[in-house]
Image 1 (cartoon, rainbow, N blue to C red):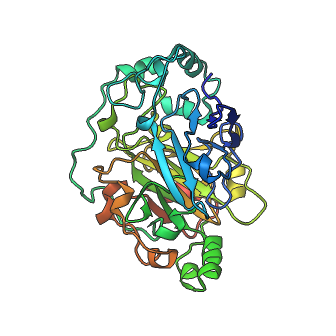
Image 2: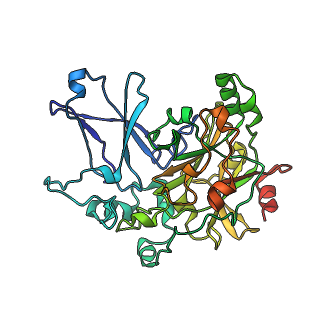
Image 3: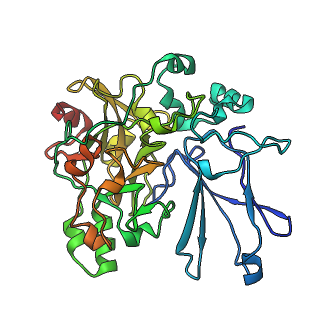
Length: 390
């Protein structure tokens, strides 16, 4: 009820369903190879090599709008398919089944998809929610009755932010062309991704760019934690009216990605709604994610769908535990507001990975919204890690 396969409409009127490339709800432990996907996402892919005559014809893409915080359609074209157009929710033309115009659920003030009877039923049953079900934190009725705090309009301060022993970078121009959502850029750099490189990213980029710099800038992640102030996001399992300007981003997630086989077989993504659930954030709005070697995470794993929950007495919160990446920590932003202090476009933009690795994102750039990664040395267990966090 929540998702349907988007369909390409050819100039002839024929219809061709897109191929499902990835569904993290079905496979929450799969998809984190290289830059990968997040396990709270679904990707579809399809297309043709068009003739000149066809390329000037009308094409279309149709489908039932999902109950999702963010949707987009990306068109890649050109000989190398490196030119892109990105269409997001408020760009769509929306219709009821009878083909009469319907209010676009991604336009401020309009009812969201959750108001559609079929989608509301699916959300209530939790039949296709997967990870996102944790984002409720309380029942939909309780959350809807709780007044929303006004988010933005804050000055860019470094409150709650400190430089750590691990740098985070904005995706540079050349790598921005290689990823989904690559059309969302300022100055040629992605406004939807930050990352921190592990050892195998350092080795791969060193070989690609014939430079030792990526190796020197990479990290051997083992035990540690990530702290950041949580953005106000669109909770598509609670909000029945779309409140565009109130959202600092439509969605944000943290993922741990690998390079060297075997593939980790544990959930690898944590989303903002998960951290906004009761008990997972501090009173001043900071959430924490712990990381540890794969065997230590496996030992704590229970359901295979979501990362283990760990009590952190020193912070009086719970945190999710994910495996330490050997390739990248990836921070994904969907629909971030350009006026939000944590907007990734505020971070420096490099022409290449080499340039970018000389320009980390800082507290001055992003304030407390900077993902602050701290590697903790001298610990050999999750319990020892937790004991060190204050």
